[in-house]
Amino acid sequence: MSLLLVDKLDGVTTLTMNTPARLNGWTLSMLDALKQALITAAGDDETRVLVLTGADPYYCAGVKLTSTLKLAHPRKLHALIEQNNRALFDTFLDFPKPILIAVNGPAIGASVTSATLCDGIIASEKATFSTPFAWLKIPPEGCSSVQFARLVGKTNAERMLGEEGWKPTAKEAFEAGLIQWLVPHDQLLEEAQRIARGWIASGATRSYRGGSTREELEAVNARESMALADAFLAAPFIKTQFRFLWSKKKWRPAAMFLALLLSRPLWARML
Image (cartoon, rainbow, N blue to C red):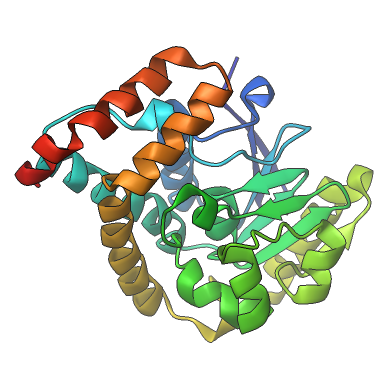
């Protein structure tokens, strides 16, 4: 089964993340497939606008940490976390054509923050938006430390990124300004196609919401990626991951995080 489904119509290329059993989560293989698809679309003269969506019921459950984090020397691991996180969001920031995100269901973590780096977000009534960074004991990523306040206001940004962990529904996200269009679920792709064709007809070029610029957001991404790498190797994050995985009876990855936590006083000296 293809990780990504590709459909082309009237200058609009639609990419559908197609691992519904894994909630379209961003494993290493999915991230590689998505990056390659964006590179291909960027160089494809038939692609004027890109639409990204997911196979129901989820849009995307975000980055699958247990499939993307690999044990290595602490300094090497820190560098890999920083580089991989920065590359993920730069992939969206550097895409040269308009991108419309069509959120068909729950969106979590990096799938939410990356969406705000695109030209527009349309969502079905079944969508929700969750950025549980405070619960994970990590700082904001995907430029959300800057971009969220510009789109939804400082108060709502703090609600989403802070301890409250506000998870707005599609209606709430629309009212707050996180998304620009809200449609019935069965009309999502039809409306996304209509919007994309309108962009083509008007000669729209790549843009960034909230008055942001690509150069500014890339600098924010670099800064956030370094802070994220620091947090991933800190005790609060490791402890939270252990407790979560243990509660889900995922014994092997839980044991890995427990071993990391217990041995941290030793390997932290090598950072």
